[in-house]
Length: 267
Image (cartoon, rainbow, N blue to C red; front, side, top):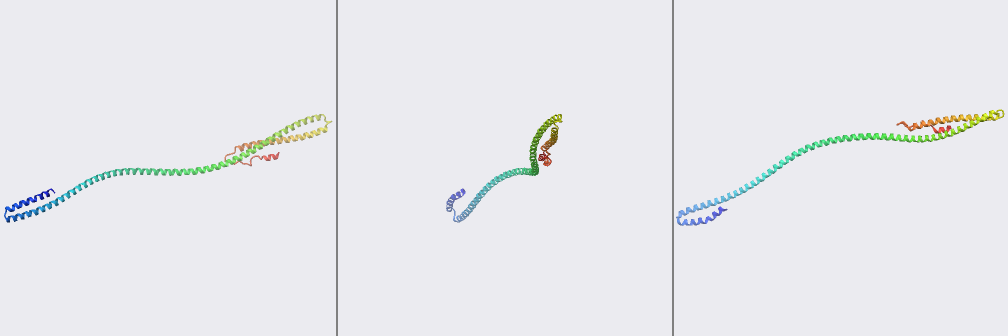
């Protein structure tokens, strides 16, 4: 733009000097000079146009170079950023690979632990089934033992009642025996007294002898009954002892004890 202004301002000066020259030179020279000036004008115009064109192109090239430099700087910055990101991603990738290996190892450990837990659960289930079976068996044994205990308690209560009854019977028989013994002694005394008066009291002696024989027979019978009662009492005591301590795992035999009602009927 500065050069164009210079050429524009110098153009009137060239025309003024040209008029002066026309006055000084001759006509042929003037024609030649005009041609030269015209050629110079054309050349100058062409050069000026070319220079303007070149200057425009130079500016465009400068702008392009500036844009390219800016793009290059941006590209360098992007490459630097991309390189940094790549290094960060590579580092992160290495860390992720390490974490992946650790996760794989952890998964293997968890799988092993799960397999161990599955085996433990299977063993515990088997043990639970076995314990449940054992518990059922023991519950059945407990029920059997409870039934046997209740039966034994009933037998023991019955035996105690029968023992009390037989003891009362024994006491009663002992009282009767003592009474008969006293009567026997009294009869013996009466017999002795009667024998001293045999002539006078023969009939009375015979009567008393008969009574004495009857009393002796009663005493003999009572002794046998007392001996039988004592034997029955011993059997009852033995049966009570055996029923209180029965063998484990065997049910008590209710038919092996003493039939106390039969004893009552015997007496």
